Amino acid sequence: MHIPEQVPGESGRSYALRAIKENIIRLDLTPGTRVSESALAAELGLSRTPVGEALNELSKSKIVEVYPQKGSIIALIDYELVEEARFIREVLECAVVELVCLQAEPEDLHSLSENVKLQKYYLSNSDPDMLLQLDDRFHRTLFTIARKPQAYAMMENTAVHFDRVRSMSLSTLKDLKIVQDHEAILTAITRREVDQARKLMKCHLNRYKVDKAAIRARYPDYFT
Image (cartoon, rainbow, N blue to C red; front, side):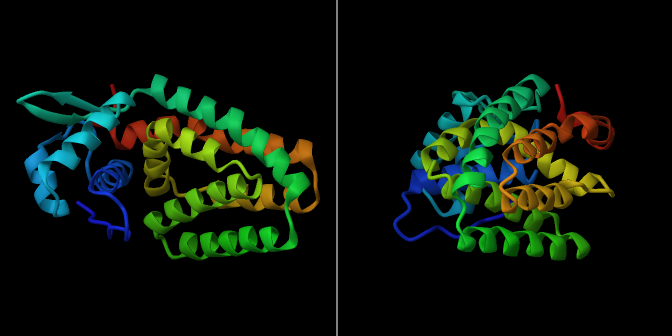
């Protein structure tokens, strides 16, 4: 299990929620795995209470199944929930990228460009974990530029279903199009091409459908 650093001022519950979610997305806590509050608390250096609260919160999004007195299970991947999470992202992100085309300042474009450069570096150096982090940062930056941080926070509640599939694609597929997609989206934003940016974002967020067969072939036991 990957143990992230606790951010100064971060509550035990928030830290536990973030750490468990990260490990689910990274597949360090694999679908179908049984976990216990005590074991997770020990690894994270917390008491059982914040860990239990985090697991209960994750159960609301159906990413964890909690069984009182018996422990919890990391839910198998349900493609209906993946599709719902993708739908939410598409509605919000296509709207956001339109705003970014209209609102982005030169420093915003520079920030996105630097992100894409780093993505290219970690793609060529085969680092899926860093690619996933930079992918998340790219999309979060779009919401920041559009001044819609609360919309991003709301989206995160269901995104974990979609994010697990994204994580699998980064470690499964040889011909990744993710970085190429981001570069094309950035080009459209730079040129203020609203319709093109929206079209590219929709294509980008639907790419998992193309990858589905390859992902399921590699991880057949992770799905319902």
